[in-house]
Amino acid sequence: MLKPNKSEALGSQPIAGLLIKQAVPASIGILVMSLNILVDTIFVGNWIGSIAIAAINVVLPVSFFIAALGMAIGIGGSSIISRALGANDSGKALKTFGNQITITLLLTVSMVILGLVFINDLIPTFGGKGDIFEPAKIYYRIVLYGVPVLALSMMGNNVIRAEGKPKFAMIAMIIPSVGNLILDYILINLLDMGMEGAAWATTASYICCFFYILWYFLSDNSELKIDVGHFGLDLPILKEMSALGFVTLARQAVVSVTYLLMNNILFDLGGEASVTVYGIIGRMLMFALFPVLGVTQGFLPIAGYNYGANNYSRVRESIKLAITYACGVALLIFIVIMAFPEAIVSVFTQDEAVLKDTPNAMRWVFAAVPIIGIQLIGSAYYQAIGKAIPALLLTLTRQGFFFIPLVLILPRYFGEIGVWISFPIADTLSTIITGLILNREIRKTLN
Image (tube, rainbow, N blue to C red; front, side, top):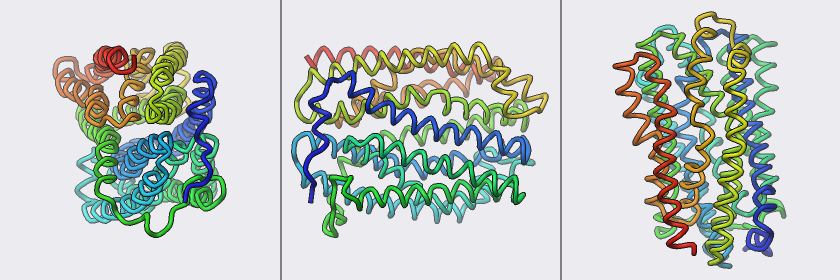
């Protein structure tokens, strides 16, 4: 059954305050999660060695993609749930949640089995060559064990946000981050378990997160109270969920392909040191953009609920404010990165080759950051309102349509610098296209 509707605030409170109320907990959760990745990299780099940073960077595409199944199912289903709650369709909301749980377990367990079977082929494919192979294999196998739990946690977190409960979603993101850092210190520093310690710390931390999310849905905090009948797969819901979730899955798949290409291209251009440079920059991208991603996460349930309630003026206002907030904080991030790249890099490692090459590369990668809020909010809008095809196309513009072709072409003419300048070019082109399409949508549909 569905508890009394507490999500109706999404359709009644002032947008500015509501967006902040949704975005701040999301930002804090992403911040803590990003800090976890950042500090984890610092611990690994200083306690195990710089080669360990490259090893973890190699494993990320595989674990990210499988975990992205949970995120895709979570976001796809949450879009349906937000609109169903806005339209007072409790049956569809409950059935969608039950289907999310069933399909997440089926897909992720299957992917983990395949990932373990083909372990020796996948790691070199993703750049785990030379001295990187063995530590990457150790980390990969252990982290993969916990991927179904991670996927369920990612899925559940998005459903919590769809219910309009950003604080609980924030706590769900904080738990694995804090747990991982504590376990990193114990297993790597105190017990000297090396790569195994780093991997078990990550896996155990997500198990803790899963139990918190399970408690949330079993407690009185959640409106969604499902029974056994809701777990049976419903084809119409699966089709809608898959279409919307595929947007997120495609984005994560492109991220995995990007890691694959970058690790291999950089290894050929500069060996292990260049892969490590990308490992550090990748962590900084995850960390530094946390408030922008928080605004995007906070925007999704507001846009979805009000679109489901046919309150288009509130949808239009939420788009404009979300873009303003996202671009504003992105500008501040840009200023800090441009001013202090050397100091930032020195926190990760004292390797001279890495210290020499990373600051300039980082400046190029972050060069177009002030405008990316337009691209993120634009693609998120279509996902929130259930329009899968434009959401997919806009999501793929940056990395799929522009970045991957650029990173395959430019290094042939400019060497390693060609890799780094591909980032701002792709950001700029994708933002222009998204801005034009979103502006047309606002004038045509939301007016």
